[in-house]
Amino acid sequence: MRLLHTSDWHLGRSFHGVGMLEAQRGFVDQLVSFVEAKSVDVVLIAGDVYDRALPGLDVVKLLDDALVRITQAGATVVLTSGNHDSAIRLGFASRLLERGGVHLRTRVEDLDVPVLVPFGKDGESSATLAIYGIPYLEPRLVADRLEVETASHFEVTHEATERIRRDLQDRRKSGAVHPVVLAHTFASGGITSDSERDLSIGGLGAVPLDLFEDFAYTALGHLHGRQELAPNVRYSGSPLAYSFSEAKHCKGAWLIDIDADGSAGVQEVLWEAAKSLAVLRGKLNDLLESGEHSWAEAAYCQITLTDAERPAQAMEQLRTRFPDTLVLSFDPEGAGPKDKVSYSSRLAAAQDDLEVCCGFLEHVRERSPGSAEEAALRAALEAVRLEEAEL
Image (cartoon, rainbow, N blue to C red; front, side, top):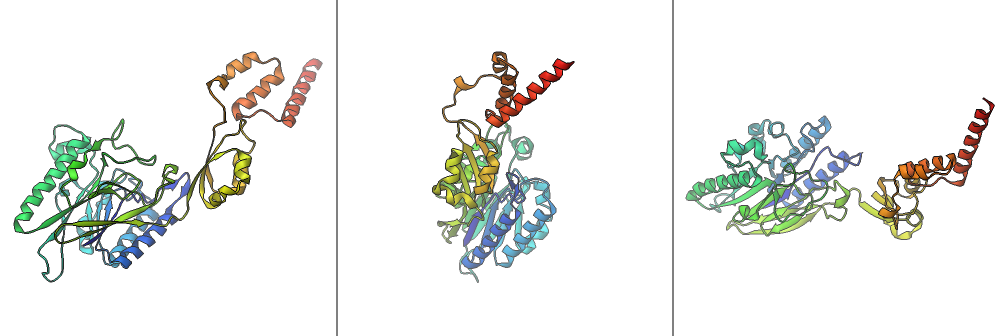
């Protein structure tokens, strides 16, 4: 049985104000081509298919097209809801969609109701693959429904996996059953990046890996970096980068081959990025002139300037070489607490009106006025002085 583990599509998300729908369409194209080329049997989507609970119409259409194309390519889809999704909206018409090969697991009541896929054809094997989907479990909302006393991520996830184990125990009375579990959660050992949202107020509510240790494979969602926590417990990560902290990520998925005896082999899958990310740091002139940064000219850029004084029209200058500079910050070399004098202290130490005006400009722009600007201020102040003298 061949499975493809993906998650965190975040359809409809933007990247620092830049819409990503076209890039997401490109990912879907790659996914469908891969499913066809590699004869994937099941595509697993472990939550956060949408970026928000109320996605736009074009976003819903993209998911609709993706599911149709995946099933037309011959694969079954098993999809769980994440903390970004509206479980109720995403789960609409789930019983009807099952007839078309799309299995939604968005309800707590269905987390121990597996999608059953038999191994082999024409009775070649009696073994069955049982795919369980655990939707994102917000402890305060589901603790009562799961009948646990403590509303914590550990308690609700522990109960969810226990219900799956009890269902497995009953099913194994009739033959070999190998479980695969999807879960949208933060498992201990995972490495976070900036674009994930907290799963609990005040921090991430982590759950231990041993909750998933005896499943053939656990497909996790929520963290955006593709990573292995254990041979049978992995995050696929997001298919596209959604923050500059993901600039060094190799975006992709996991391809899992499970045999009738339950053994699993896992291979990495890499997606081609529509646009690379660059995180650059240095002085303005060095960034504009250095040949080592030529690769970043076609990338989305986050740039930190280290000039002692903030250059004039810094963003405009940078975009002459790096047109897709999206984030600009300043971190002057050598600056420290001793250099940071409050504006009120500067104002009190000013010797004349010109120094007051120049100090204000430096305060709001983090750059001293140039000679032409200082001359203009001096002329304006002189004009005011003469006008007052005539009164």
